[in-house]
Length: 315
Image (cartoon, rainbow, N blue to C red; front, side, top):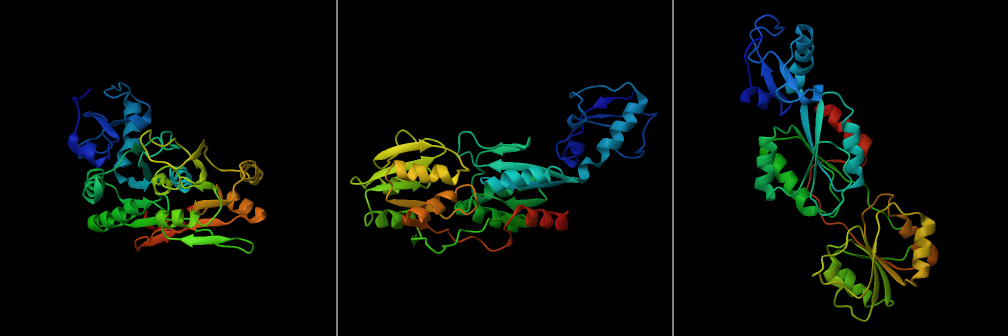
């Protein structure tokens, strides 16, 4: 058996899948190549393992040599569509998907084995990550209201020269029977609340509750995934911890049982939380709808299938 050693150059070329290189003088299907045999974790072998069987060595080489050709896809997550997209991309040959989550929820929906959690440190940090991880394609599938990271992603992709796609589900549209009051900020939504009844269903998550904290004459039912920080300023009322999707019958009962007189909602789009809009329509309740912030220019997809087609074009 030849000498065994790690190879930092091959480690980079194989995009962090190459762990140990075994040089053999008698079984080298890639004669002349610097790293003929790669023991990757994806082959179910422990780091530093030795292979004594010559046929096995050949199979490992044939399986592993193409790892450097995998295109690395970074998906910026934060939406249900990101979870579904990551699962679908994982089944496509020739691609390796990494999902990045901001870490704002304590128990995020994680389906990809290659998931990082935490921020990048602005545009410069994201640029460094894209380069250091040899990312080939960038997909922004963050929440429609996560405007800052979307702009950072567009700028970083342009800086590095990467193909960049924004997966943005369509916004809800006002239908016959709806009583929407469209506003462009949480502060404007709070101002609208003063004109309506005193019992309000607040469905904006936990990040922007402070904008409503001064409304001490109102009572709020505040639904969110994680509880607010103990020191956060929040309006009077009740915190309800729940994660969608929500059934129409449940939403209707929730509004009736709590005597809700108005709803404040972000225009997030999608089906998971749309039932509250239908329930408000049926009950004749006004909805103060916070419209989405502007998004950067660039390639866009409105559903997972379109995003997969974009990936196929850039493979």
